[in-house]
Image (cartoon, rainbow, N blue to C red; front, side):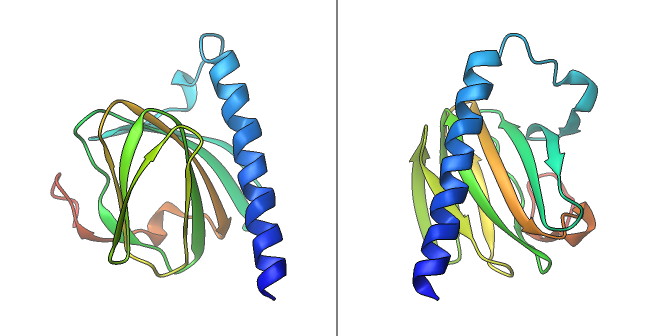
Length: 144
């Protein structure tokens, strides 16, 4: 079981690394604006979805801003920093991530990202991707 989980996470990281290269190579050519969802901390763009199995999203967080302290019951997430630097909180752990570094967030685990500089994060979620599945525990923008 552990070997299977490792292979799954390793494959997911490889997918994120490939996607990171595409984002960096095409950054000037890709028009995300039509698919932007604006948020108080920046914006995000859903890139691909497989009907409840997985979702690929690109998150842009402005320096000094942070996402809600939150958790999800229906999905787990793998974050990979494409560029910039974030502080990621997962459960009781706090970690600083730079380009090409990843962190895995299990279903139900409390998590948050804070941008230490303007940052682009590739989020690959597994399970049902539904924005209504966000349980906000703390929020800098009054959305609890």
